[in-house]
Image 1: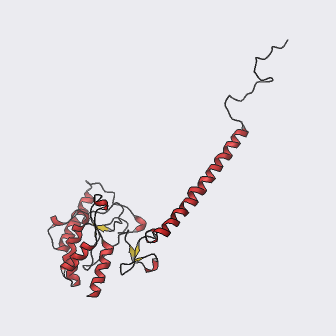
Image 2: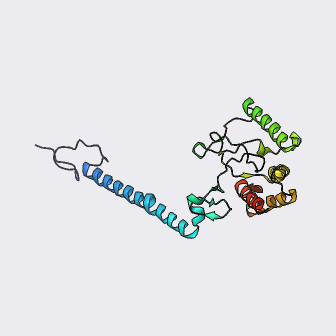
Length: 225
């Protein structure tokens, strides 16, 4: 005589599937749901959000949204063909008639495709030697005691593309630049002061001088005679 099943127990052969394991149908439903969520967030965050941010930026701040470019006269532009540089990215200036930026370890110097610092530690003999060499070169070029050379004239920035120098380094170069261009030192010093940006919010960071903007203003002043 067959033994009756326990109340509530299923009839027939017992299932070989472990308790709690979803079936293929449930797994399929979960996979479809996951794909739908992936597709929705891809469209939202990968397409709609970037387009919205780009659109708002182009409408409200087109100059900044297009790279903060400037022309040879120092005017803002959004046309790359008219630009001589970006106020956000440093570039090299050679010769006594220009204010010089800080050193750069990005490629051969201010290479935007190789943005990086030197990655040399403070005790690196190579870094110490480079600083000593730069200090001697700047002191000789500016005709000052090596102890007066400011730190940003000796070390590269972490990006290698810093567009700024300190007011101290700019002031150190005034005499050389004025002599090379035949301008009064006071006039060049006034240009430095006019292009010195104060601390953001009055407390963050340090005052800085944008080298590109300063040199463009210097060129315009020299052209006017």
